[in-house]
Length: 184
Image (cartoon, rainbow, N blue to C red; front, side):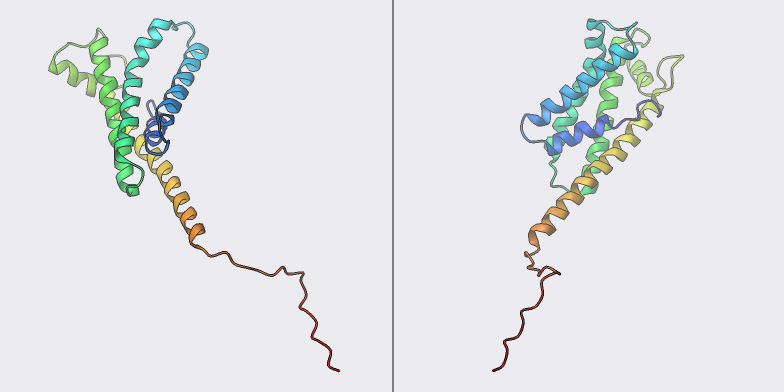
């Protein structure tokens, strides 16, 4: 998969849409933190430190919290296309927050307007250009939000149809008709 092509943005946005109460905040954030911790410890143990983990991941979790809040503010009763747009706005929010954090934290960027634009477009030398990350973030956010919301809308429609159908009484196929009364 390309870098930053992920279902994470859509999952977190949809958790804000569909999970009630505190579950909409706790479940996605705990799951994301747990998987990030496992990935960091298993695949990158040579780079892992607790302070580095918290510093490097905090912009992601600020963005995830924003995506959950966005999902909550939009609400799941809206039409599919509007929820799709919400997921794409969430992906843009994630990109802006994390790249702004990189601009603020990393020493390779000048702390000027031009440095911030560089963080959002070309990135640092020796790395992929950040506009490519944006393209992948936006396309995966749209794709996965569309799929998740579409599945939820289809399930809601099926539930409504089942509630509306009257219970039909059917006679089992093996049942034979009652014999006619004998004439006497």
